[in-house]
Length: 166
Ligand SMILES: [Cu+2]
Figure 1: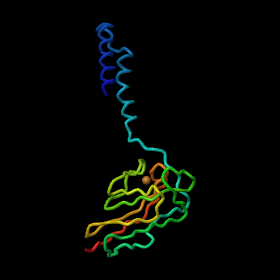
Figure 2 (figure 1 turned 180 degrees about the vertical axis):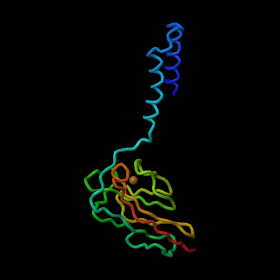
Figure 3 (figure 1 turned 180 degrees about the horizontal axis):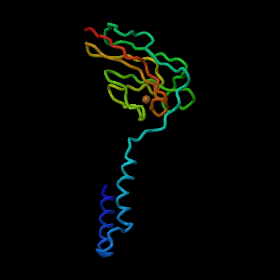
Figure 4 (figure 1 turned 90 degrees about the horizontal axis):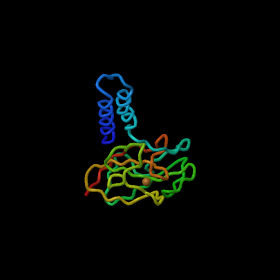
């Protein structure tokens, strides 16, 4: 932004130096087109995505929607038509699990966030032990490629809602 303002100021100075008579000089047109070109490059950056293998599917292999459970609970992840590998391994047709807890799907064009609600299983794990507070929680699985970016198209499970009792 600072650069643009400076470019504009320089153009204005040049126009003044050239004299007041010439109002339609090409310099003025150049200055006008610069901000527009900058806007078009400000679109949200999206990273390259790995093609999902045909028929790839991810799901909770035991936990059912509506289940009433106690904490801690073991959650197992199932896949079809995809190989689960550690993060960083970019062999064809592979990915690793991410568990989304009480949150929606993230931006598919960026690496999956890493926090308490977006848990990565970058070691290639296919199950985890979860500690959840009593009450209702939503869980969803989302596969990511070697760089933690969802595939194209993204491979994710349905959302399940579970109730944790004391
Ligand atoms: Cu990841």
